[in-house]
Image (cartoon, rainbow, N blue to C red; front, side, top):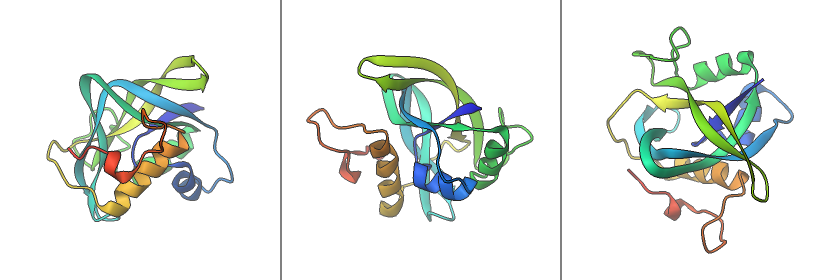
Length: 161
């Protein structure tokens, strides 16, 4: 089993449906020195979708889920990632790449792991739809991340870049 870092619409509900599973092991997670931006275009969402780019000092909050190689092959298809060259795909909407993330295992208990993440091949900004942003918020909130003031994250809290 491997970890998959979910920073966009791939939340527990969506993944259980795509992977046809009744439950999925997951943990709150964040990627340090990465930033969430919106690139590419999804026909399903009719909008731009989340990706991450390197940015020193930035953080991306989401969840990590345990997946099998077979799960990854299903998700590659769903994410329009090129399965033949997932490290440097010039085809498809995304590539699958290993990134360093921190799992939250409890109060002040973190574990650094390498996790797969889907990253856009596009450098061009594409505005996300309100519907898509609600799924991003669902993913973040499933990780039980909150704002500094203790409130749950809302669509208004997601920077659009």
